Length: 257
Length: 255
Image 1 (cartoon, rainbow over the protein chains, first blue to last red):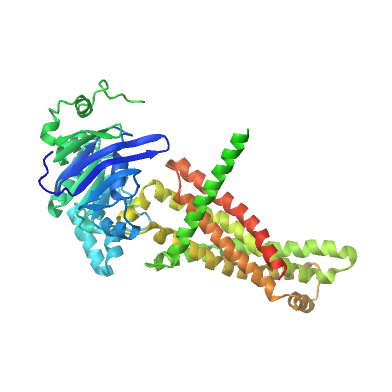
Image 2 (tube, rainbow over the protein chains, first blue to last red; image 1 turned 45 degrees about the horizontal axis):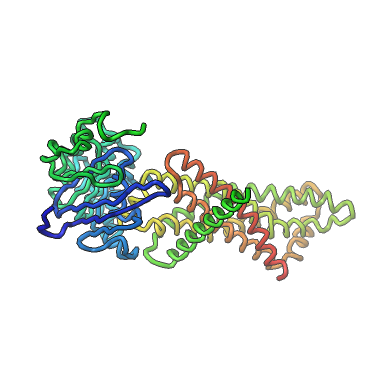
């Protein structure tokens, strides 16, 4: 791999085990600034754990994770909170706060970090709602009153509200119908481009990968076994990648059902 | 056999250590900003105001039954005059804090564990972190402080209602003179009786909130995980309340 500039996110030999279950066995990954990296891999391959390590939600056992050349695995919780303000995250199930209204959800991060007043927060939330294609009457509803697709949109609006430098997407299209999945994919591409942000997504939805990825990394058995541009993915020459992207039951990857 | 006992003991010590770490972290965050006053207010109303009916009913009937039972006992050696004193002392020192504590543990401990557990399972706690909000400060601290403050207030109200329950039974059923019943209620009542009950209440409030938050926060995946967390929160809070009830009584015994 050629090193032109320092990567936005850099993982070096990251390891993490839960008891005897070695989930990550030395993950190496570079994500350049402004690029959209998609990590693919089967269930239980360590995708989510990798993401949570970068977010600082899980402390890796060893290895190093650099964000803007800053080591985050050895940071104090104060410093981590600062780094966290660079991040936005779209959770798999949305993870909207069900005791708060939609607009309170969207403006939550901003109200935590700045002294923005209520009216400004509300109008900002409405702006973000528009950006994800929702009308302003949604702002005063509670998350439980929304459909799954709308919840995803609101969660996306919340993830981009603080204009993060890095956005993470955890299986953004899971649980949505194919059309809604495509709508969300389009929104992700648009939002990331508008912000000029770096994006790291994990998914096993290949339609989603082909739509949002600049680069793809495949994780298998706790290691990145292949990474390259989306164009190279179709002819990677890697049997594991081939099996995965074409969804074949037979191949080198054995699924323990 | 020996290995099994040893392993169980080590697991127990590890659990105590995790709980102590959690409690220490929660307490240290109580004194560091930012503070979430809206959350604190919500919890205070939930724990204090909405527990009033439960605590009121519990203490009222406890006071009533205490009057009946102590009358039954004391009439055997013609000491009926002590009924009022026994009622007030047992209510303030023992019955109001313990019964209120156990009832609130069922009501509040369960709902805390279920709410925080669901937030854990649906990744809302992780979401708080990514939105620059410390989940300890936002979720745990308001609940702990509310428990510490609201339980003594509840018990104070419970004291009054319990004494009144005893009064009603004493006067209308057992035929005491209202004036002399009240007289003997307050003549022998000491400050320490009420105070020790309130100290207990504060400790129980802390235990209830701590157990609700701890089990919810460490809830395992899925609906079953939240169910287990809820059960554990109520059971462990109830048992700890009974244990600490003895310890605190013992501490006040010589005073």
